[in-house]
Length: 351
Image (cartoon, rainbow, N blue to C red):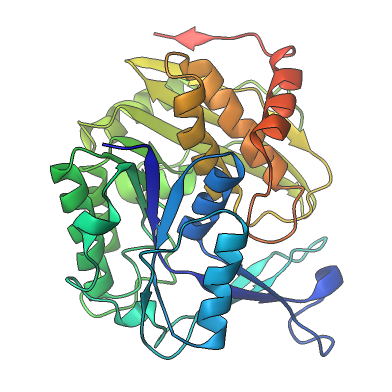
């Protein structure tokens, strides 16, 4: 087993308007590449990890430009499969004052949309790897894509890799005939060694009402006993999982958020401080930045779950300051934020 981390999902084009304009305003779109698993790959590469991204792209200028952008940021693209006609697209309208953000998908018919099991040589793609990271989005597009996701997971398990799962439930994506998002995500959870999600995703899967996170200042008191009870339900769905994270965000306004997370590891619960982010630049990809920070922090602090959590939260917090889907923060920058926060944070471990 090597040191490489492999992520698998759909690379997409994101189109939005500048200065928080509506999609119907102005004639100019801004374009960026993104997508949850690609975001994680870029975050890992920026922190110095060896990372490989697996997807299916068209052999067109747009498909090859996407792969080129990933390579520019240090992500390996050796196992990208080329075929199909188009890159999937999503349109992001930024929140402003009383107006919520919105996402409109245009993914049907993309190269990834026609991905099927057997197309990717997973034993070759996963050689010299230690971690496979996928998400609920990976399995949400089509039934064959879901089957290909489990094909990757099963090969990775046979090869002894750590399986990293981000639940990433997006209700607007599960549209194929016979789609069963809750059952599919539960099946994914059963394979997880490391798992990420937010309160909305855990609420959907467990059918347990989410615990409100209403922090408007960093001194908000978390109802930790309530979260501990909820965790007992969650862990039954992923008995092999070693580390389970739950993230929380409160959107006080369109540009003012608070952010925190909890981690269960080694039969203990760890809580991070609440980060106040008064000038959000771009909230997209924040959870992916947490995932990338977490997987890197497993190497930085292998025996310190509190620092793993604090580092991950610092990575996610920094992403709020960066336009686009990708977290372009380095390990040094994340460490600086974590260490500044660390002086203000009394470590608490709940048995």
